[in-house]
Length: 167
Image (cartoon, rainbow, N blue to C red):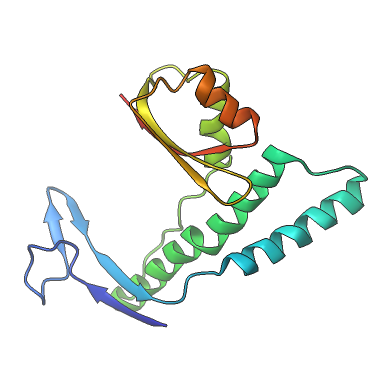
């Protein structure tokens, strides 16, 4: 795996590693590594499901299974990528008293709940979304009412909303 600073925008010259927009500085850390194989994710998922089923004497079904899988993927990528960025930034500037943003709730689970039930005040659904399936597939929806029965049937079958357009 290789890790290095990179220009944060294509139009910048090669040696320009910071782009300032108002009071914000945009930086980019480029990493090249192997993607976590699906077999590894499934192995971890089966271990977690087996542990829960054994401990709680119950079956882990559709939505919960999808939530567990989402947690494995998020934990393996987003959090570690953010921490790598902060680690490299600390090495470059000496000190940086920040921590990665942590969410209390599973994001796909939350937005799936919005589509299933209701959107919070101030959030209006757009007309496109992506839904992941238990089998590892992705359903891409465009130009559709996200509150329609068609979309609801995908969620009822265990699908998880992973991307959503808001207006």
